[in-house]
Amino acid sequence: MKKRAVALCSLAALTGAAVPAAGPPPAASASPPRTAQAAPAAALAWKKCATKAHPALQCASVKVPLDHQRPAGEQITLALSRVPHTAATSQGPLLVNPGGPGGSGLAMAGSVAKALPKEVAARYDVIGFDPRGVGRSEPALNCRPGHFSPVRPASVPVTPALERANLDRARAFARACASKYAAVLPFIDTVSAAKDMDAVRAALGAPRLSYLGYSYGTYLGAVYAKLYPHRVRRMALDSLVDPTSIWYAANLRQNYAFDARHKAFMAWIARHDSAYGLGRGPAQVEARWHTMRRTLAERPAGGKVGAAELEDTFLPGGYTNRFWPLLAAAFAAYANGKDTAPLLKAYETFGASGAAGENRYSVYTAVQCRDAQWPRDWRTWREDHTRIHAKAPFATWNNAWYNAPCAFWPTHHLSPPDVSNSALAPVLLFQATDDPATPYEGAVALHRKLDDSRLVVERGGNHGVTLRGNACLDRHLAAYLSTGEVPGSGGEADAVCEALPDPKPSRNREDTPGRGALSVPWSTMGA
Image (cartoon, rainbow, N blue to C red; front, side, top):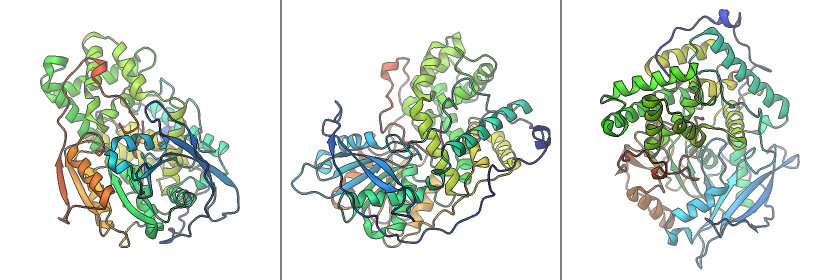
């Protein structure tokens, strides 16, 4: 995703022919049934795994079938965490998921238990889990170590050589996954993960579960509710995936939304020109950002931050404006004084990808490429992203290459289930109007799919809005988890909360919020 519009050469000049799919051609499978048989219970042996921040944390693991159609076949292991209830009576398990796909949920149990009002958390066993393929679950995927090592080819394919280089990276990733995990990839998908959740519920000995999911976790929750509506006690979903555009179309829409958030960031910098000295008009600031990207494409900062790494570094500013002061300071230091140190520090904080990031990306790709059909002819990708880049130049091509392995993925695709549901107790939905990772229109679509849902809207805002200091939103969440209370039905939005104010400018790293477990939920867009 990025930049100004550029003319791209023909596919024949790059490859001589249409890009073929790796492996057999895709074939749609039947959607999963409305309900599914619950997995058999398995004993859990909880052990202390306390941290300084979360002294009550416990850990366990559970075996689930790799293929849920063959429950007696090969088993895989899911890693679990728990903060046990402390009240005299319990409301049962509250499973939590940070999104992704590919996000680890182990630390999230402690974070959610700490962020909820004490009297609410005390009545739940807050359960975190690493979905299949993720983190401490086994096997954990890492298809191609070093795939994001700097310096990568620049994202915007201004030359045939750049497009070839990025296509070669995407093909190499898909081939590496096929080589290392051929037996596993057909079972890394959202429906399988939802069935795993029910195996966790059964292992906990709970007739029903409650659930709090963010970003991709909202789609996982909606699929679980479709499969097991009778197993859902309460379900709160924050930053809602559009279930009608899984997944190629959803990523195309993100490109416009992230560009809009980037422009909002540039406008914020312009309003604080006295602090950053990058220009008094948003267009002037944005022009200087694109100049920085072009310069870094030719001369990467510190041998690490080229154009693609710069995009990775600034993408989190779309997820939350709390990162704007640090990013703006790094931008100003480089653009005004050619000081690369703050930019390198920002890259290490937000953009660099170690083994955990490689695992997240491997699972992200495996799930999204398997879940639904993607174009297998690269000409479709090029036409779509060239058109969108002309209007949304911030990160369109970065997003294209992030998802490009799906053009060459080795497994057949599934058909996304219709998550329409009239069998649930009220589900509570949360959505910010300015969220770029899961744009607002998707929230409206899911609200319509879930008959008895209620939508709480944050006017403005970011991605992942509850348990981040907005008292209005958090009151709705706490009341719902405590008693099941929801706002009265009021059309498209059932309740509205105002977003928190934009941050104040700062050049100090210490004044910038860190990336805790709930800082930036993983979304349907990576980097």
